[in-house]
Amino acid sequence: MDFLSDRINRIKPSPSMAAKALVEKLRAEGRDIVDFTIGEPDLKTPDNVVEAAIAALRNGETKYTGSNGTPRLRKAIAEKLARDNQLTYAPENVVVGSGGKHIIFHALAVTLNPGDEVIVHAPYWVSYPDMVVVNEGVPVIVQGSEAEGFKLTAAALEAAITPRTKWLILNSPNNPTGAVYTAEEFAALGEVLQKHPHVWVMSDEIYEHFVYDGAQHVSAVQAIPAIAERCLIVNGASKGYSMTGFRVGFGAGPVTLVNAIAKLISQTTTCPSSISQAAAIEAFSGSQDAPRAAARSYAARGKLMAELLGKAKGIAVHAPRGAFYLYPSVAGLIGKTTPAGDVLASDLDVVRYFTETAGVATLDGSAYGVSPYLRLSFATSEQTILEGCRRIVEACAVLT
Ligand SMILES: Cc1ncc(COP(=O)(O)O)c(C=O)c1O
Image 1: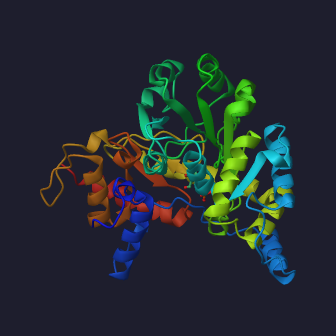
Image 2: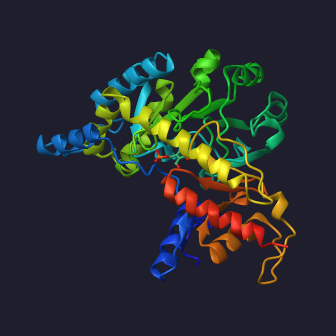
């Protein structure tokens, strides 16, 4: 349609949101679908957070706030960064948005000029490249590999940097692979970044609470203090506190950048929800039992899913280190024939086969930039994991 801008025509809808819509459609048709596509916690929002939201409503905290967020929430976030990440930020260094995604989008919008490059390591969270494109930047995709633990290496970073590089986006713990960078791995990237002071770093730490098997979350700024002056930390309440619907995320970084983000927010969404901000103060400052309990629960479920999927012929699984996703290779299924006589030529074919034949919804690695893999979320009940994996094991067994 001619009326729509070139900008919007260049991007696609978020594949995970599209998958959610497909699952809903199939269920509405009466199909029994096990859903492993979900990118959000299945756990309840903690009671203390819900109570804080209700109290905010009763106290009349129902009006616009400053575009950078309320002073109390920005103070709570600065204290959270000191407590959890050993980082010193003043409330003036913090901007609150309607989700981490909102902050990333606004950060790109206020910094990218047409043709500016953003380094994105694959497999990547599906939204990064499109958010760069819609802001007229150029995503420079660095292909990662399982052999490197799906982590960006110093050599690959060095090779990707050009005079047009504006940002490097880092995401640890990682969606979709569950990879968690160590301080040493970040430090190796830091050595490259020291040589290229024009490159800024966006460190997406939204899954920080979910690390397993002795892995530890380290903020990129903690590991590379020299980049503090050119790093935007992105985090939020969605994953750690099961608050996806509240839409609260934040950016922490140099004042000039966070003020520019707030300036744009003042012209887009005005401010994040006042009620959600009040709830987020309780999330960040109140009892931290809920994210700890959630991490224990996801650890057990990730382990279970990895064990069960490991039994499927043709699927090679690694136990997750962080976040709540598995990213197994399905190279062993490519070229196989289904009972209906179709040949599985790609991971997208595998996704279709599992959805249509086994009633299990997953996401294809091609959406995340590295194939042939699948992304499966284990932020779902143990019963769902048992049933979905049983169906996948069966569906793989009948391939020839
Ligand atoms: C890697 C990553 N970053 C950021 C987000 C954004 O989350 P929200 O906008 O709910 O804070 C997500 C959500 O799926 C994510 O997976």
